[in-house]
Image (cartoon, rainbow, N blue to C red; front, side):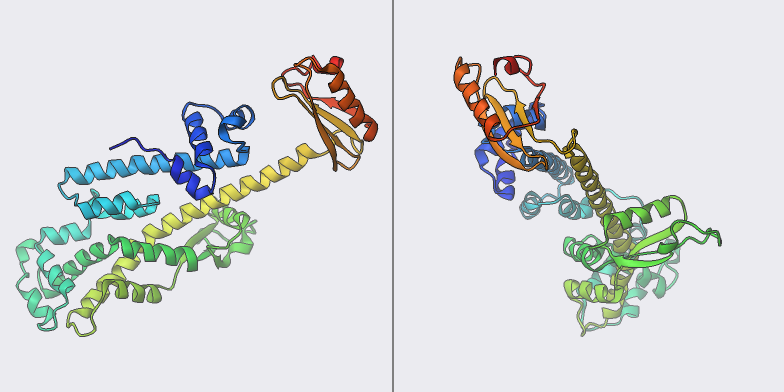
Length: 390
């Protein structure tokens, strides 16, 4: 398999020049930091700023992890001798980790499940009969031949129950089914919290969440994180709830349950069991993990904005300032701001190339036009050399 290069994918996703993205990807792979690339590799990257480069880095890491997992899954399925060209194409086309894991699920090694036990008892052919949805025949008559006390199948009810366990697992491993359930939980799920049974009548700071529900898709990060803290302190219990009846009808449409089949009730019962016992808990955990990640990022954004405002606060109060950012190769960037911090003008002077007279003239012109109370010189490269010359 050729070496994976995420540059073209990232460029297409972010609508950025592919040449600049390719350079950034190479620089990041070599261990260069985002601030270094943004500041000292502008020409090579095409002038991409720090925000764009950081987004490229995040997508690069995600796509590399996705590709690594894709290769591992292809290898694991191939070892089992079950890798068809159609399955390979689906795996190679997967765009997210969740989609990739859904495709791998039927081939993944599992712990001992109810479906495995039913298969060991020889009930898989009965499950296949139910899945084929014949128009003729009787479920009980079909199950009668599978009754065997030596295999812990004492009667037809036990045989049909085991067959339904097998069908429930088959349904839960269908990537289309998992996609629908994930969408239902993500788009229409309600995050519901209640008071834990162990909590008495003592007041707590989580009382507003004792009987609380809100759409998981739109819940603000601070509320979700507060509920998480309540769970961690064993004051709250929380879960994501959906309309299981509506979801079950959707799964029946995907599974193409026939109204004319005499086995339809057992098929429906297996789908409902799969939804409640297998799909629901699994997908709910995924949705809650996504909510946690989304809330963490939102909290970081709030802290970043607060820090930005703090750093941008005028350290000298309301004073007009001219700031000089020293630079050897690209010159010194000079900017004037008024007493309220509003931008007034900018110019660039270059002292390294020997044109000191021109530099002094340009800087004095800026000072005369926008007289400052303070001139601030950055302490970067050349910071000590430039002020005397200027």
